[in-house]
Image 1 (tube, rainbow, N blue to C red):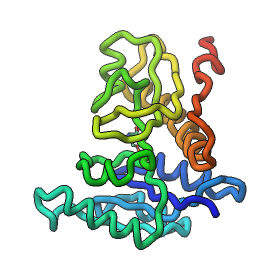
Image 2 (cartoon, helix red, strand yellow):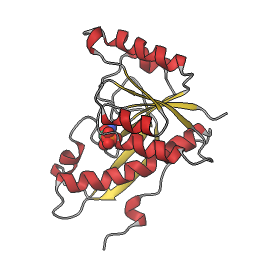
Image 3 (cartoon, rainbow, N blue to C red):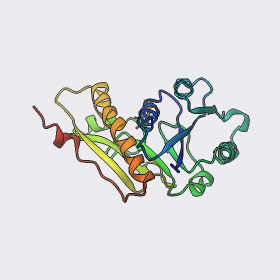
Image 4 (cartoon, rainbow, N blue to C red):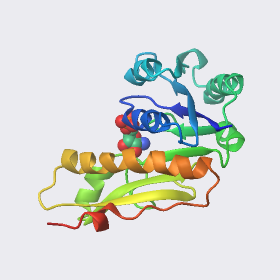
Length: 206
Ligand code: GRF
């Protein structure tokens, strides 16, 4: 039996799309069984339903400031759907120790930087401002520290002269769509920590 995966997302959902598409092939070792969003109108929900994946919004508003109560409501949906792995993919809520502890070593996240560099927001602007020549993305296990935890996969891209934030973000995002499905596949099939080759090395500068 393939492990059943839930994807959490809040917005655009392009990583969710990449995971659902990858899991569409018969030999992919995990099943995307559920998409959860904290926003009723997240476009990601429609995409998931269109691909036969159950998608549910669990809004935080009814729970006010009680973030754990919101997570307990989500966790009940996960239990009902017999979920074994969570993939955070642009889920814009800070998690409480309840969910992190309950799903320790079973929750993955993707972050648009080469961690441990640039945890948090605005990673592309910060990489440009720092004058970095390499930037990239990371898939890691979620711990109580934000954008931290054991690294499962990374891909690096070059920062090219004159890059805008949008150009750099697009170059990184293309790699996110490759390493997240690959990292989940490795994780779901119980392979040890998996690290990608650097995209920068595969595609040397012209
Ligand atoms: C991605 O850049 C991901 O690394 C970060 O949030 C963004 C989500 O984008 N955690 P999308 O919703 O998957 O398109």
